Picture 1 (tube, rainbow, N blue to C red):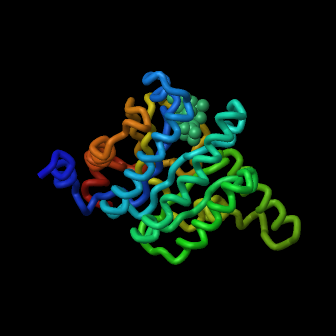
Picture 2: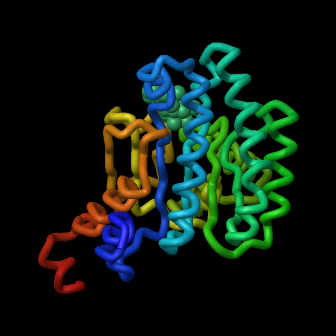
Picture 3: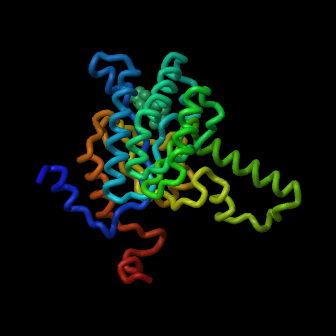
Length: 253
Ligand code: IPE
Ligand code: IPE
Ligand code: MG
C-alpha cells in the first residue's frame, strides 16, 4: 500500500463531502521561490488541477468547484492576464479526452463573455462535449466573483418583478439560490484554500454559509493528493451543527 492509498483507506466512505470548493492560491509565490516568473507557477498549477480533478472523481466527490480567475484578477498586469487566458484555453483542450474518459462534466461559472474569444471558444467546446457526462461536475470559476454573481441575481429578479412575472413577496432563499451560477447544486461541504492566506477573496459568499473551511500553507503547485486527503480527513472529524446543539446533532433531532 502506498502512503496515499493508506490515507485513502482511512476515509469514511459514508461521510465524503458531496461538494468541494477550492481557492487555488500560491502559484506566483511558488514560482518566485524557485527563481521562475509568475506564469511558470500558473503552468505548474495546471498539473495540480489535473490531479485534484482525478482524485475527486476517484473518491466519488460529486461537485468540484475551482476558483481559477476572479473578477479582481483582471487588474493584474496585462502580460500575466494574457498568459493565464492562454493557459486556460490550452489546458481545457488538452484535458478534454481524459475528462470525457472519466465522465466529468464541465460547468463554467462567471462572466465568461469577458474571457478572450480564443479561450472562450475552447471552454464552450469542452462544456458542450461533456454536457452528457454524469460523473464529477467540475465547476470552473472564471472571471467570477461572488458579489458579481449576487448582483446579477438581483438584477434578474428585479427585471422579473418589473415585468410583473414575480411577486417580490415570493422571493425567498431558494429563489436567490436558483438565480446564482450554482443553481441546482448543493452548497459546498468543504472549502479548501491553499497558499496560506486566511480570506475568502469574494468567493461563493452565499453558498459557503455553512461550509467547513480548511486552510493550508501548501502553495497550489505543491498541493499534493495526500494534502487533499488530509483536508477530507479533517472535514470528517468535524461536527456540523447548523445552529443546533451537539446533543441534538448526536441524537439526530
Ligand atoms: C493563484 O495564484 C492563481 C490565480 C489567482 C489566478 P496567485 O497568482 O494568486 O499566486 P500568489 O498568491 O501570488 O502566490
Ligand atoms: C483568489 O486568489 C482568486 C483565485 C484563486 C482565482 P488571489 O490571489 O487573487 O486572492 P487575493 O488577491 O490574495 O485575495
Ligand atoms: Mg494569490
